[in-house]
Length: 247
Image 1 (cartoon, one colour):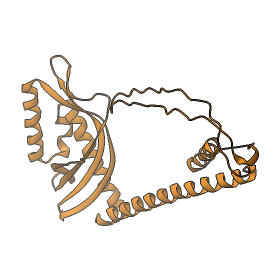
Image 2: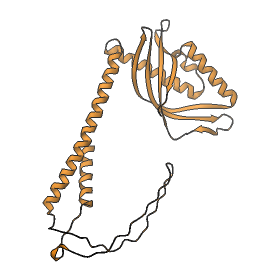
Image 3: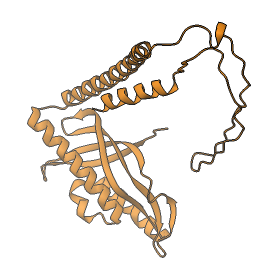
């Protein structure tokens, strides 16, 4: 449906910008006046401002030859739309095929049948979202069962240090976008890359003042999470988190 809409818009754009001359003077020559150029100025990335100026003089086109028939314009327009549409469609197909192949490779790397693979991914997603929410609340108790003791104590120390300094790191509206690059380390340990978005900012506890980050603009993050299997609890637990730069 989107491709059809693009075709239609491109077609009407072509008809709008294409020159259409219905008459020409004898011999194909006609006089005219020059066109004064317009000027534009732009602002920065966050705020935009612009102006247009200049006076458009009377313009008589110089045209040599016969007029373009409506049928010719239509055929040219359809050709243009067809080429542009085919290029867009081919690019989308390639991106889709690449994503499908990457997903298949990711699932193939995870041991077990399809049911076990899906169960593992659900465990990873649950652990990730629960830990993120607990971090946002500055209280890890609700997420303790998803932590190894080592990582739990590490995060607890960081939150306590932040509290002593009078601020908290908030990670709101977290959305897991993609899991990728599964790597089996040993039968009881694996790593996986997690790509996600969230609001990430620092808040002063006493006043609620925002010290850093944004409460309205989401940021994207890529991290490698390491999981260890806990025999006593019979589940996978987050053991180490390694950030990956997206710049």
